[in-house]
Image (tube, rainbow, N blue to C red):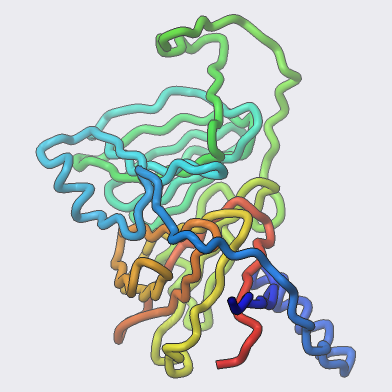
Length: 312
């Protein structure tokens, strides 16, 4: 039996770029990496519900047709949980916070007014990406005359706490007790910002993407570009896989092609979610004549990309 070897390519694009730049400025080229042995299960990848290789937004909407308010879990694994949530105009999410986790949202339709502790209130619209750090109180409301649709992500098994003046919801098997925790809103640092808008970013002709969420337990990268600027596809290149964590993507614009082990080629469009479990080869690339963008999400600051060490 042939045992494959793999090269561990770097993690986040930002880290790779910085390492390359340092080497170039010093007049040195990085030595060729020696191959490493990596385990790869023989069993075929199985997608555990609710995850599946390709979740189409059109199908999600169709399943809730006629409802102004609804929610559907799209990802729920060991690292992250993601949901599509629709709110009717005027519907509110009351003041709350998470004691240990960062939460973020992408607005896909409508308008949502956010109030975040330490920030001026603002209204997020389609293309807006919003995040709230741990122990930071926030609330939101769907404003305008149309339902608002958001993609919501948090760390797996995250808990929600409520300020003393807010009545918590009744939950089976639980009681609410008053506590203190030395609460300290964590604020924003690194590349984390309370609110950015994808469509504003891409007005810059030189924009190729950036990191949106940078956290010890989660990362979210905006990856933007056009197929016309890519080299021809190599059908023998399986891409890479991640041994420690799944990765998933929300398509923000255009089309993304995903040749994926055990799933064939997926062509995902705006609002769709693509999910690659651990150990599953995938090779995402921009697709079509127009610019396209995917928001990549996983549970590691600089996740390892393992590729075949044998050149094709």
